[in-house]
Image (cartoon, rainbow, N blue to C red; front, top):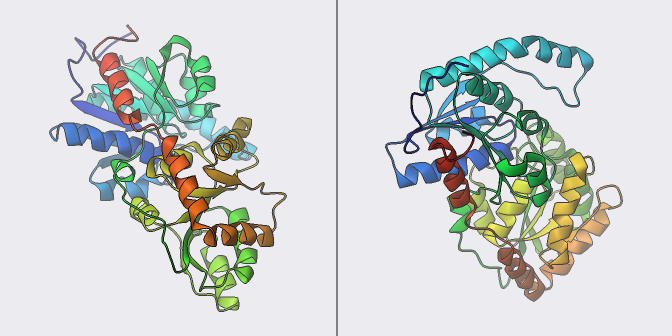
Length: 371
C-alpha cells in the first residue's frame, strides 16, 4: 500500500475533519477544532462534508475552510437513491483520497455522517492516520463501516467502546468551549424563559406538541423561544399567530450557547450531543426522545438524566400538549426545583472530553496507535 507519509508526524500540524450532516456532528468537530486553534493558531484545519449538510452553513462563518464531496444517503432512503449512492461510492472515495492527498493532514478525524466514510477510507488507503468520534451508545452506519480501518475511536459510552475493541478510548462528547464558560442563573421572578428545539433541523412531533401546549402557556408565565427547523417554520409560526401568542419562532439559532445562557428550561430531543451540551451548561430540561433512534439510544440518554433528577422525560407517543404544558408550568411555579435540576445536570458533565480526544489524536498522529 502506498503512503504519502515518510515518518509519523511529531505534532498535530494539519487536521482534516470529515463528515457532518447534522448540527450535532458538526459542532462536535468544531469543539475540537476550536481548541486546536486556541492552543496553536498556526495549525491548519480543513472540514470536508457536503453542500446538503449543515456544515455548509456553519463551518465557514466560524472561520474554518470547507471542501465538499458528492454523496447521498444509504440509511432509511429509497432503493433508487441508495443504489445511486452505492454506484457513486468508488468515485467519492477517490475524490476523498484526492482531498486528503492535497491537504496532507497529520490526522483525519471522522465525525460521522455519510461524507465521513469516503474521506476517511480514501485517506487510509493512501496511508494516512485516522480516528473517529462516536457520541452514541450504538455507532452510526459510517462509523460501523470504518471500525476496521481507523486507528482510534473516541467514544462517549462503554457500549460503543466494545464495538471498536482496543482502538476505543472513553472520552465523552466534545462540546464547544462557549458552553463550558456559560454564566446563567434561573430567573427569580417574571416569566419562565423557555427554549424549545428539536435539533438543528427541527422536530415536527415536538413542534406539533408545542402548538397544542401554547394554549395553556400564557405569556405572563412563560416566555418562549422556539427553533422549528426550516421545513416546519411557517406552519409553527402560524400556530402561534392563530391564537395571538407572542413568541420568538425561528428556523435556526446560530449562537446556541448564548441562547442557553438566557434560558431557564429547555424542551428538546435527547441526542448525545444535546445531552452533553445540557450537562456542560448545567441546564434543566424536559426531554422528548426520538422513538426511532438507533438502539433506542435517545431514550437511554434521557432516562440517565431523569434518574439523577436533571431532567423530566416525556414519551413522544404518549404525551399530549396539555401534559407538556403542565410539566412546564409546574417548573415555572417552582424555581427551587428548577435550580436543583440545573445543579444535578451540571454534575453529570465531562468537561475534559476535548482534552481526552486531543490526547488520542496526538498518540495516533505520532504513531502511538495503529502502527
